[in-house]
Image (cartoon, rainbow, N blue to C red; front, top):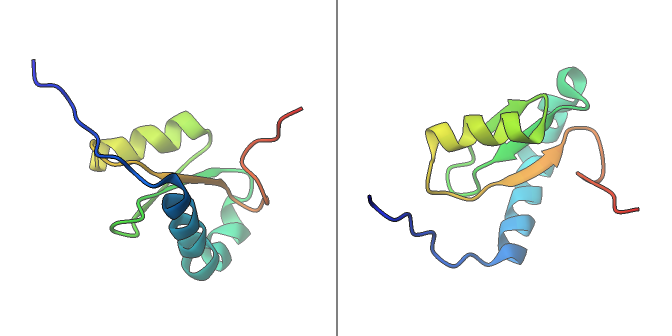
Length: 84
């Protein structure tokens, strides 16, 4: 069985680049029709995948790019999850 190796990723860079893609390219396009849904963004290609839930968006993204990590955002909301 082949082991999957994910290279070290700078999480701050991933978040910064993902948020920039969302704010500059996707926000105005997605918010009118997808508020409350989740978007997974591949910061390398700029491709994005929408799901009703985080697992659904992740599954779609991983089907296209199985070895990559993604930035997730809840469309139309300032944060994905809140800690209580």
